[in-house]
Image 1 (cartoon, rainbow, N blue to C red):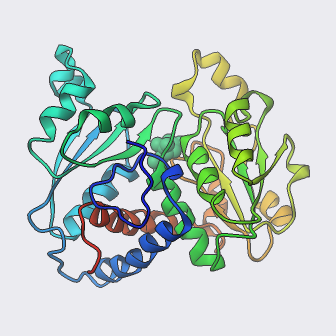
Image 2: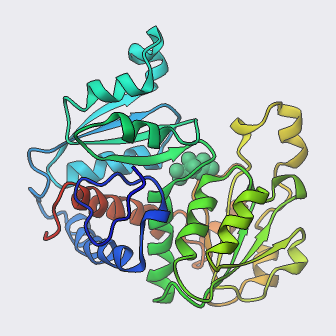
Length: 321
Ligand code: NCD
């Protein structure tokens, strides 16, 4: 259920950044630092010994799936991995999500779910009587663990999560990572986000209104010329092809904005970090990868595993490492 964390993660479902306070995020980041030490120094850990986490992914995933799996294993826990349940589980026989969850909860201590439908993680959380469900991406809805790792990456660089100016570009209508990141940054004061997208991929009116009500300053722009100079971060995203009704409508709007060396030279500053949740499909030129400000194939990836090590531990009732 969408229950506030209030400093106590044990057995809580993690569905949306709306459940968090800045203190809760502080708790995760403190434990994340300890988790980084375990992972970087390959320290053997029995922190999650005896625990089994089920990873049920109805949609493709590289980073989220592998980093959750690695996170549990680095801490001595084990995983049940159900990939593509539409073909490789009784879902192919017509079993509902709720029944699938009820069955799997008999075998494990926590369920991590990715699903193409917005709201599916909440449905799963309602179905699960005994254990917590972590949302690993529900359709166009939310992707809270991605936002936590994104915020951890911003914090690592700027040592704060307030008074930031950022650019978020790409598919703001369908991108769940964007929705969760905006919710997360709304918890802190004085953040301004420039939202760069083609008209067709703007935030939905409802999302825009909801986010604004949380107090974050959102500025919609449709041209790179309107980007602020020397922003604290750029967060580029992929146009979400799988959410379009036809390939033609996707082709019409894909890759309107591409990060090139020239764009970085013109608009980024010394302190600007360049982020992307990945996968990228052409919206960041590979020439930019070697720029030290590009963190998408560096710390952003690593932080994904550390943050998930911390979050799974907290949800399973462990805080001290
Ligand atoms: C994102 C997702 O699945 O929402 N990927 C990820 O988890 N890093 C972004 C995307 O697919 O565009």
